[in-house]
Length: 261
Image (cartoon, rainbow, N blue to C red; front, side, top):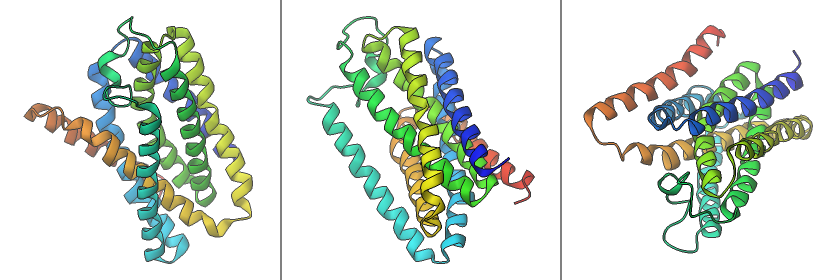
């Protein structure tokens, strides 16, 4: 397959699979599975970053300091963006951005769709950026693209579960919540195709796009996902989390091994 074909397939498959899997979990309230998914997603994200994306970016750029600087800038950028989103979402101490699971899906106390609308807008932009990340990775190497796509799918599923719960709380029906999430997922395809044509003439930018991609994944794993794991403090939970994180890293490592990288 051509690089563009890989980008299209990965973007479509990733978006549809993430939403479908999230719907399966969220709409059947399998909450005990969500924590397991989050732990696995952390491992997949960190494995993709440190075993594939960053080594490839450094090799492409030939300048470790420049790539490391781009990662640092990216982490600060994503911190700032998240702060802006929180400010826009929250006008008081308790809101969906802080406590999405406590109030979600309780069947009352809807906000007439306001939080749901904001969520879909933000999620669509996020999916668009995911498409750019997938395209940049495939334009360097097909194996890197596959690993990156798998890591994005792994962290999208638990995020989409949270999105479903917030939409249900916001007054959306189960069918409508599924429909708008599926439509939003197609932004990944749009971002991937646009990035393919835009980056073709800007090959020298690719290592730094990859570095920003790595920063995004590190930030999501460390700032957004890991703090939630610390809420479960029992030894059994901790062991399970560590094993699932290790499994996520191992999945990425195995993908590289069997691809002959």
